[in-house]
Image 1 (cartoon, rainbow, N blue to C red):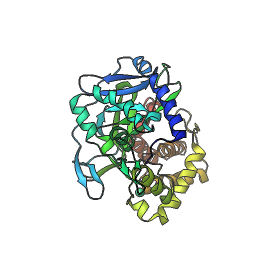
Image 2: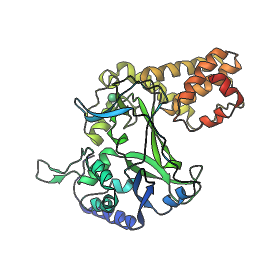
Image 3: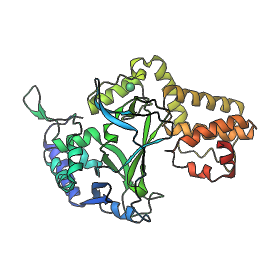
Image 4: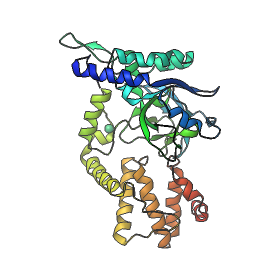
Length: 365
Ligand SMILES: [Zn+2]
């Protein structure tokens, strides 16, 4: 999102941000392997330090990707081997994490908020940070005014991944208020956008790291992608948001021909809205579904898979409903098939409740 320099209203906002930034702290989280430089509100780091053995070590992964130039997109990541849905592709701590309101700050003073964090980075981390793309470079407009962001704000706004972190030293991650932060990563920030992404990043609090999972089976040589904007919206809205925030045009199949995709995504979005926050399924209780609801859920699962949206929470919701209803209907072959799919959704936080149930392993096999 390109922004101009200060006017009166912006100067006031900049002053408020400066006051707020005075109450924040530069801090480092990590171990000998990888560290994150953070610009935190007071209380955020304290919340993490209450996690036993924080930070847990990163998980070891088999090399699964390399960086290449993608025609029309610039740098991106491609798989170097076949990946199965649910495979852990990489596990990394962010290079830099900052409160989101500072990432939206106004240049040139906004730039100064991040300079101290950059100065604290290890040389290799600083090099990796500065090598990331900046689609908000400051440049003169037709009227000769300088628009755009400084180098650090530009990189953060181009590459930041949204993240909710604790607002105070409350119990975490079970409860407490959160604040929006933005995390810049060496590799995950290199993933290009797709409206049908084949990876899903999950933030793991205990190790202060992002785990990137394959959202479906991926062939060797396939580009790895993640979602930048809300991909349930119609193609025209997605394109407008991507152009405004990231300055590119998405050429994925769902954007190229939205005539089939847009109605499908509208149906999925409506179903997701109906089920948002509901506790309809419980593996302990095994909820049933009447024939119409059962058929509707089956259709939803097929639509989500057709659109390549398995990473969305609605996918695990519909799988859970179908698993339980299939068990109640004694359709155990179908229940097993569905349970194996849910078992691969390793980015879903509440899979643990299922894994603890004695029937779960029998279903997954
Ligand atoms: Zn697209």
